Structures are given as C-alpha cells and as structure tokens.
Image 1 (tube, chains in turn cyan, yellow):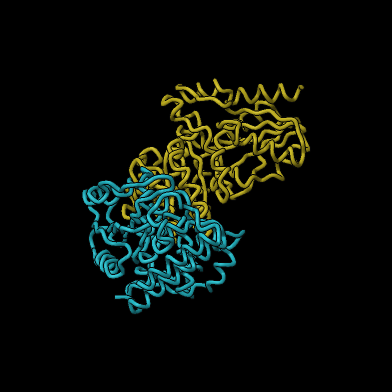
Image 2 (tube, chains in turn brown, blue):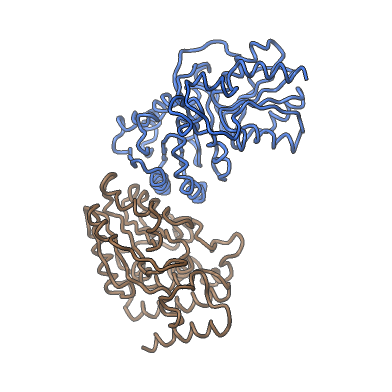
Length: 273
Length: 313
C-alpha cells in the first residue's frame, strides 16, 4: 500500500525523470543513467505507507533511514527529497554541483535535508548503514550498486549476520542494473552467498511499483534476519531509448540540445504507453 | 621534571581500564574491535558490557564503517585496533570524518611505533600520525603515560568530535600526578631552559624529561605534546624565540609527524634551526623495544647527545 494512488506515483516518476534529465543537462555532468535506474525503487520506498519521516524535522529519531551507498545516484535523492517537502526543487536546480551547497556531486550528510550519509567511494556506506541499524530501532534501508559489490569489502558485509549478529531492521537494496562505469557487471551468486549467510533474499523487477512494495513489506515484517532485495533495473531507464542499458553513459548526461531532446522524447514516449 | 614514578603500566592497559570507566559513566558508549581485543585491552569493556561491544572480526574497514554508523545513531563510539592494521581502513576513516562534527567517534590505535618490538617491521606503525593529520576534523591525542590515557579518555567522551588516540605496546613508567593534566589542543611546558627547546610527543615525553635532568638546570626547555592536532603553536613559537634551537623527538617517521608539524609552524612564524629524533623513510626491523629505540636514536641517551651537540654548534 502506498500513501498515494498508483497513478499518482507513476506521475511522480515521470516528473522526477524529467527533472533528472533537465538538472544534469544544465549541469553538463552528474550520473543521470544511474539515477534513472532507481526512480521506482526510491519512490516505492518513501511512499510506502509504513515509511516514516518528517521533512520539518530531519533528525526526528523515529524516522526510517535511507542510506545511499552508491553516492553517484544522489541527484535522484535530491529530487525525491524535494518532492517529499524537505526543500523547494528550485534549490536543487540552483545548487546542484555548486560550491558549498547541500547538493554536492556526491551526497554530503545533512539530516535537515533528509540526507542521511556522506558518500562517494564505494563499499563504505553499506557498512555505516548496518552500524546505524545496530544503533536504532527503526528500519534502515541501504541502496548499493551491483558494481559496488566488486569491492571485496562490500561482499564482506554479507557475512555480518554470521559473525556479528543479525539486524532484522536492515534491508540492503541492490541496484542490479548490470553496468558499472567502464564495463558490464554480473552479480554472480550473490543471492546464494547471502542466503548461506542467513539473509532473507528477494529479487524483483526494480521498475514495478507493486513488486517493490511487496518486497519492502516482506523485509520490514522479517523479524529474525536482515534482508537483501535484488532489484533488476535498467540503467538509463526512461531516457533516450538508444542509450538504455548501454555502456558509455555513466556520468555522461546529454551534452547537446539534440541529445537532450532525445532523452525528453524517450521519456514522453514511455508516458504515452 | 620527573619528581617521582608510580610503577609501570602500558598505555593500552590504562586504556582498557579507562574504557570500562567511560562505559559506566556513559550508557550509550559502544566499543568495537577488529579482532585484537586482548591486545588493545578493549576486552575489558567487552567483559563489563557485553551488549555494547561488537567484534567486527579481522575486518578493519568494516569495523570503522559500523562504528561510523553507530556514531551516526547518536552513540558515543570507540573503535579499537592495532595501529598498523588501520591502514586497511583509511578510506572508511576518511569517510567517517566527512559525516560532520556532530558525531562522537574515538579511534584507539595501540601498538604504534617501533616499541612493538620483535614482531618486526610489518607490525611497526611509524606513519599513523602522518596519515591521521591528512584527515580534517580528527583530533590526534598522544598521551605520555597511563594516567594521562585515563584522563584523556574521560575528556574525549565529554565533547563530540573525531579523535585518534595513539597508544603503544610496552609497559612504561607512570610519572604524571593524579589526575594527570590533559586538555585537548593544549601543549604543556614541562621544564624551563634556555639553550635548546625539546618538543616531544607521546611516550617520548618521558625521555625528554630524563634528558633535561641529565642536561642540568636551565639547559632544555621541554614541551610535551599530548595533542598533535590541533597543535598548540604559540607555546612552540615562544620557546623557539627564547632558545633559538628546536629538537623534536617522536617514535614516528619524520615525514608528516611531529618534526614536520613543528617545522611547518616555525617556518611560518619563527624560522629556527631544528634537529630531529625520528625515524627516516625506512621499514624497520625486529628487535627488543629498548634495543630498537637505541638503534634508531630515539632514546634518552641519543637525545642528550643531540642536545649537547646542537647547543654547542
């Protein structure tokens, strides 16, 4: 169950994608394709009816947490938080990737803005998130990338329930978009490994709101083990269809008016369907 | 001046006691260790407060990440390890310091320096101060004896922030009064002299005081550093202006350590001839702690020799 109707959520996804394209076309930099791959994953979570937060009090202790470990997806985080009411979206457009703003090229922690953790180098945020889950009673979700699991220290996190104890309030959301910066990636037997180490493992279509909702709910209800939800996504989803799921666009948003238009046309086409 | 000693205690053992006391005072304090709890003495805390102790296993980056997350959950946190193994965790330590100064995180590193001894060069961390100086927000605490360790641990858990506590392995003379002097960011003027300034850090402060006694009244002006970052520059500048000669002494590589910290301050504010007792850019070797300290010119005898030679230049 979502806090809004499914059609409204789909409309939000459309507007956020449009803003992502606009934001990074204007900045001429930023990780558009990763952000596009996570739109449904993120919206389904924050609009789930169980998910607690207060835009007027970002450090409210009873909030549920989202740690972003693959920090290059922060443009999406900035736009979703604007949608949730933490700040006007105009502030994101004015401050994105500019000196000393809350909207840096990778997230700088600011609870006031709903930004739980500073991030950047991969393989770090997910450990911090697990530590947070040990320290709080609310739910802690952490979004990590499939490429991020090439960092051995990320794989190491899977062994944590085995030797440190199971934080059942922790859910790892693995963005399985099959592409890293310079190469395709394949997560291999991560699901099997996680099961062996006592994780509750699920795998869903990361662009399907209903499936995501079901998985998040199952993770929250799990009382004994941490969960991992492998979200199968498409890098660049809902932009220029010629670039969807293709290498070569990591950190490379449209640079010309023509390229920009191809992204917008692609997005509009998905809306009509 | 050393008026009296009170037996011997290692800095790490004092740390274990101090952690237990801090655990009693602060019910939110959590402690982690990366599989070295019987070496860092964090085991004492584990025995006293098992539900607030996390063994991260032989997993330094993970330990620092978990510690950061707990600190972000508004806990006081101490992450303990042997210094040299924290090389593994450098990216995670830097990432911790980027979360903002509302966190309360202490990294306690035991077995710093060559006094680890026979385990050899792989186990001697002689660059930890340099590494930690490169990370903004971290305050670097370098206690001189067990009593100052206890006091420093009390103090650091009173004020939020990031702290690196440098501890070492051997049993050392306890020579400070109780309670030991310690204020974060403050240096201490320990002996009055006019011929040469000795600036010493950590366990080398005891050697500096021994040397000043041997050199006699009025010879060495001794400054003890128990906070390397931020460095109490004024005291060093004033002493340099008085003596015109500054010697630093540290169980650390000169690169990035006390010598370069002090040299940087003096180059800017009071250019002064300097000498140093420190390690070069070397990998060290197995040996007994006293043997290695003598071999690398870090002991009291070496300091006396260097002061005399420098003063008669």
